[in-house]
Image 1 (cartoon, rainbow, N blue to C red):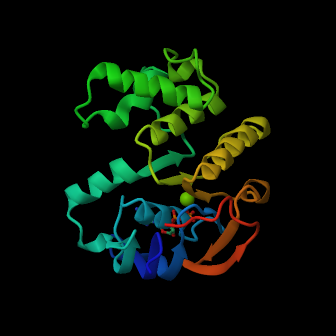
Image 2 (cartoon, rainbow, N blue to C red):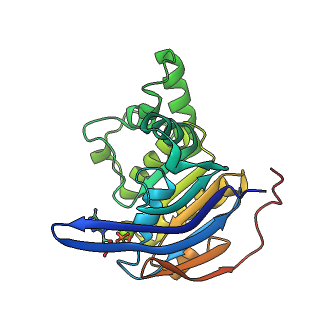
Image 3 (cartoon, helix red, strand yellow):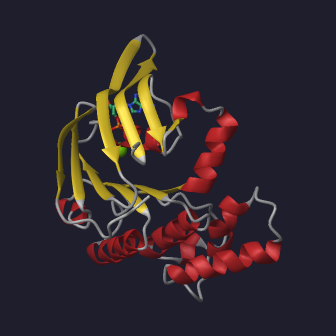
Length: 236
Ligand code: ADP
Ligand code: MG
């Protein structure tokens, strides 16, 4: 039986001029469908590099990453793009919304290449914005929304393709305590609906929403422990 996510001895080395920077150094881990995992570790420990690889945005220099049993290293660029678009949602610290574009259009963006009728795309965006508590804000621009609301738009954009995996790299890093709590409560609810979530955070109280905590050090797993029982027993 393969795991949902399976990393075996993953290395990532960046070449900077004449210098090799080792971001991951022999990292192995398995994550099952339906898990809610917090990835912690000091700055530079390789958290974002790992997320980029898990999200098929980047490939390991060495080692094997399998997603649902498929060896990602053997896939073509267009197959990777397809996996990213269909199966993976990303949320970043800086929201990464398109400026001077409405919440609705931002949420709709991942549907661009799906060839769906525009009315259907908009209806899907309206629904997903409703789901993150932004009904009535569809036509607001980013500058007219608070940080917490902008992150909700980013989550709506990540959810519109119904991904099975949500990757969130310090999603509350730019938010106040109250907005952070709201975002984490939302992620917790999404996990309860079955979405696998991998969350990078520096903060213990944010990590406490997850059910498993993995700490990285020097591009390897330093510790890995279950902190709560899983949201549901998943049979896949
Ligand atoms: P974290 O997210 O835990 O802070 P990163 O994965 O961003 O860590 O970085 C791990 C290491 O790899 C750091 O030493 C960082 O400087 C280096 N690194 C990350 N991305 C690049 C890149 N694109 N080019 C060169 N070095 C990089
Ligand atoms: Mg990082």
